[in-house]
Length: 326
Image 1 (spheres, rainbow, N blue to C red):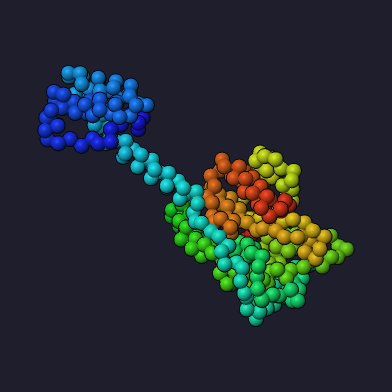
Image 2 (cartoon, rainbow, N blue to C red):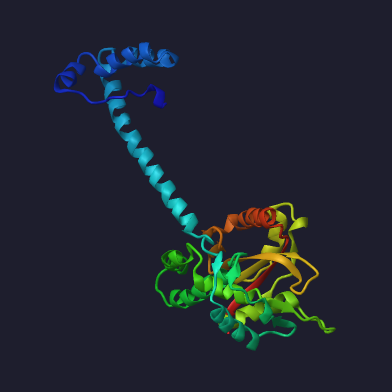
């Protein structure tokens, strides 16, 4: 349609008066029919209509109105598009700054607290304390986001406004905290990385106890843990939704890892946050930020996000842990 619009719809006083008898727009379309050869026929037809007596005047007026409305309509829908984009991503995040030096004494201080509150079968090896972090800080950032969410949740529950809108508004404001990785996040992650498993003959849920041992640092508790999901066996969002649909409402720490037969029972992993409660759907990845999820797209988006992480980090064992304050 844009190919048949004129470049200039402005009329001088003389051209406006002339248009009552001979359409200036019609003359311009006639001229365009010789300039824009691929659209010659269309411009010629418009010119013929607008150069007709009486009917041409009506057609000219209509074209003038449409020409003014189209930019307004485009701008309106573009604004809606930007609003929807903003709603999809409450804030953008990254792990920029996750590689860097960390003060040994500060890492040791976090390590001491972790050791004091570790779960059965879990230990933190002081010899693994490093002075430089080079493997990312996703777990530290995920726990920090979880703490922020749970604090804001208390405020939102007491608000007279919609819980969903209130939480979205609050979380947008804290987004700058998660735009990059701070030194504090590196310090905590360096201490978290000293975690090890001490194998006992007794039946112990090591995966859960590892996360709970880290949650203890923040005075948080796991009150529900899902079955392990093997992404290698999940081929569609519908298959993933079988497990997602069974989750109760709440805020979940999601740990996706590559299993290994070592002191951690994993080679490496990635930590995310998934929230579904009171009509609110959120997905936080320290690498990308906070995504607002509508109910109908949650399984689809999680499937794509999990598969993306699987390809990038070679992780495939996923598990959900619901987190609440102690």
